Length: 226
Ligand code: DC
View 1 (cartoon, rainbow, N blue to C red):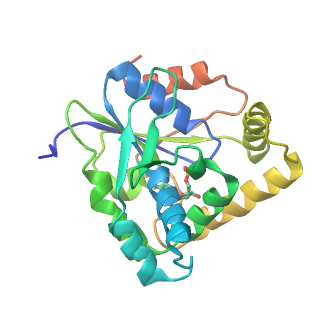
View 2: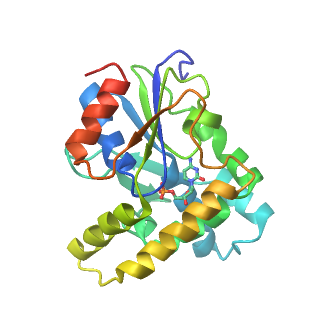
């Protein structure tokens, strides 16, 4: 049984703010569990496409979300968690720009969000959880004792994504990336279902111009763990 008393640190914010990396580093440092909630929206979108469910078929998407057969497998330090969908390694497939964009589309639907809610809460287990997303502090874990909202300018986030993709050998145009980031921010912040915004009791950290170690330091301080 998941304990309702296990502590949670929520880290919300837009894509490219550094929250994914910081969440992994913080979870490792504390020896706590990790929830990458964005992966669940990405998996829903990917599974829907693979099963031939249209991205505007709300009832079909709810079924896909409720029935996701997913496992998150730990890896060596510094490596991203391996994501297994119906027995198949989809770690790389869920990270493409197309899947990210599709995830943002399915995430506007409240019934899809509802279908993923309990699955996310089940990650709250002793000794604690670091949860990464858009609505971790506002909706999924409103009673979390520590809430962080990590942000960065759209330009900085586009630059970070550009170098990540370049390093992975993917040829991209930085202006196109910036435009995609703006469109996705707009959709995530202006949807009626759990819009991206800091919880009233969140500590806002702007990571623009900071190294990942500096961001981690500020998050540790915010969590009272520095
Ligand atoms: O963090 P990410 O890029 O992996 O998230 C992919 C999409 O999923 C993002 O555009 C918005 C959505 N999402 C959400 O609506 N709520 C969350 N808690 C996490 C992600």
